[in-house]
Image (cartoon, rainbow, N blue to C red; front, side, top):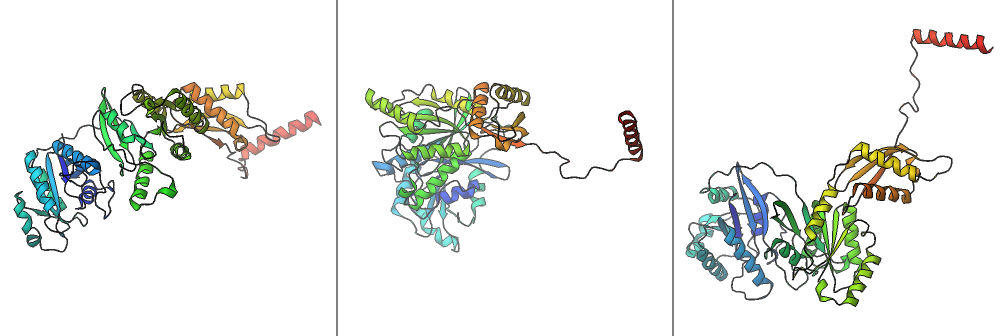
Length: 466
């Protein structure tokens, strides 16, 4: 296993900034606001030929007994239990705080290896800024600046010094990335925890609990998956906080990065225009889709019929290809068929379609229902081939294809979908009109021999036909 480095500290000491520096990414949202990170956030780093895992955690408030801060502390403790090395981060500019002493005491009880990291020391004398932190009894403090990169490589070298060389494994086959999306407080994080079988992300009855997109690898029956827990998407007019705007961007990026999106709806609330907008964005990005109606166990028969009617009316544009599941993520009911539907949607999105089969399907569809005539010309569809995947893209070649109406294009999409059983993914059909390569060009001059043969043919014609 790669060594796992876990970043721990009180709020706003620079853990997420260091996470981004170690992973050479911008995956963690960074702002000068305490308590921004809430869930565990995993990333991959490398120093030379030494790879490692790094885990960002929320601000550690070990004495809090309830609320979101208590849930954040539980997440941090779980991360420390997984750690090979804990990087305890303190703020060099604000100095030693009483909470640092409490956190240090909690970490000592775990028995994990700990490095004390004094952050934000750019432009300061290291011996002076680290002096007061010796009283924590965690050994020699390591002064760094995560924002500027000062001494970060030296910190990683120190953290990895006692670990043996890790052998790289061969890259595994590609596996589904699944983005769990929806409005705030519909149960996305609860669904993630149920799929994983553990409390991996904070699930709290408060809108906006999840702020960042959390990538989680897991394995089920020998098949690898990556789940992406995302922040809830509200209407633009209600997104007021700057942090929430960052969260929305992260969610949209997660959908684009995923292969399959699971759109979670709340059965206890009516299907809103925002639900339809989120579904529309997923379709625009071309991602495979599975629909989930959560909290289904809390409804009576009349309420269930009402929700089904609303889905048929407001989300009808999804129902011709997306599977629909009625579940309770909290109690686990209705979950049995969800992963198989995700697998089917992923397989359909990544399918490889042969050109001969596509062309035969196209010609059969044209024979059954030719495209309508447009003026003096009728579009001619000659052959088809696959132009891409996720979503599957089918390119049709022919002439006058710019005159093919949208209704006929939808007819072809449905024909391809039914023939190749592409369940769970949108399908795109584009047309390419062929062009005469000699159009607008002067003919090449004839050779002397060809000119003589042409002259003889003309003379024979004149004698024969006068």
